[in-house]
Image (tube, rainbow, N blue to C red; front, side, top):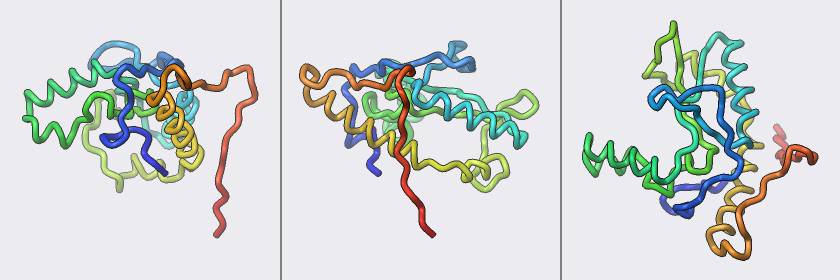
Length: 178
């Protein structure tokens, strides 16, 4: 699948999703409610509850970031680690998936403390491989098309439209055949 947002496929710098919702979890550094796209919120809750059933406590540390906030992150890291390292670690404003509200950074909490280093081979992350990401990838494909249309001609296409909660929701799935 195509990547929705990256340095080769930037968003319009003024893009703000129209379906952001505040989560009940605070950004620990900013002491503000983290906002994410309503599209991914149910999936996040399902993932968080699945983690808790396995004994792991995860919360959102970062969700939606507008271009201005992304620039602040860029400037902070450029001052701290220099331009070359910042280019490797931080997305340029307009190229961060966080600007879509569809990307989240999670933190893992043990005994009330943040665990900074978690690898793919640890028990804390093995359960993630059980989640089927096909439907989320299809959503990203659909959103990619909407964002490209938005950026090409705002007057003609307008902002991407998300399905309302009152209408029937649909999902596209692929069939895996062994």
